[in-house]
Image (cartoon, rainbow, N blue to C red; front, side, top):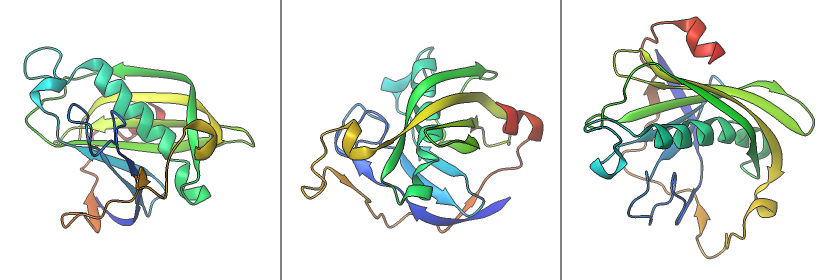
Length: 180
């Protein structure tokens, strides 16, 4: 299923998940989709492994949690983030290191101060490798971190290969996808 990309979210310099200058980080790119979901894309390297050839579970938790937490950003012009209050995940299949990783996050319940979300790490065949869900506090980015926005510490980094349409893969079990 192809979905149109409606925007790209900012990256930080040194964040482990999205930091473009963190040599050990994931350097994830985050995209807002026309269906209201957020997608993260990154290419793991061998330093990200747990078992040989497999993505470490803690790293999988990091990218899944951040993708769900970022799903609130488009509704607030990228100025509000989700700060994790609770997060859980179910590991179903190993995530290989030799393929690009795609992570989907969405809002499932939106309140005044808190929101809930779910998400998945999806493999190329459309199967859900890891499903997660969480509860997040809505906070303005300037209350969470000391970011020098004018100094380029938090910015949208345009790349030649930024997609305009993303294939969400034929997700094998739609109920797993929505419930986490």
